[in-house]
Length: 335
Image (cartoon, rainbow, N blue to C red):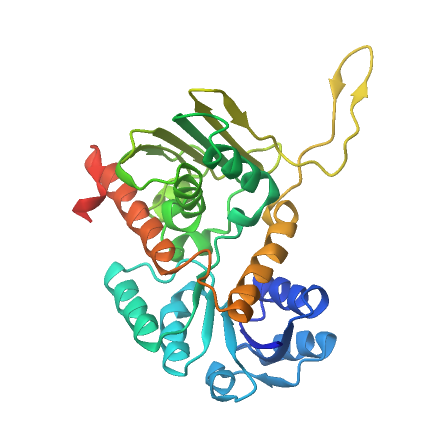
């Protein structure tokens, strides 16, 4: 079976997904691409031999040669396009977040459920081999009963201030991946969060109403205690690590480097800096994610990252922000 896919959004992440589908997944065929910047869509279509090119995503949804769509457009368009795709009967892969408003997310998910289409949310880090191995260790019982989880996620440099002003803030645009990873690894839902955060890097981020340095404590329903720390600037590169402590042992991950060379001299022992950002660090996870989406359509199985996984991390993000503003622990049931 071949799955015909339309890509909506030909920017950085849309390009990555389209290239993986065309070049690495034989069960997939990209038949359409849309972007409001028609020249960008045309350039990618020319490179990948995609037949339908348009500036209007509705042309993709109307095409009988499209079985499923990838929503890779700007965040503020996700909910509208997902709803329209559901009404058109297309299976949907959507980059996160679905929306920044919980009521809108609920409306979108209701439309998806009513349409009966598959809905896959783009939390690609679940498909990273390193994190998948930690997940396997936890859920096989290798580590025993999990007691503590610590997730470190630090960007090499802050995003443009124009992005910060419209992104929804650090808990939605950055830590949302870590909220999902926490649920994925522990296998239990978070009941309460407590946030401490500040502006330590760039005062303009504070002027835009956001923070750039944050720690969130998580209390899980199964008793696990977790912490997530985020920073908009780690001068040494993209810092992505996890540690899990259980009754039978621990698991920890390190950063990924461009090579395995260690330099030893009379003055120091050192190595090159980690891979610099997410496109390099998570290259394999994006391919594995697309394979999982296509496989769920071909085999008729539920997507491994479904509707609830698109909603709950947003609830966690909203609770984290509320905790920061009110200076107290916040239960997710309050949101």
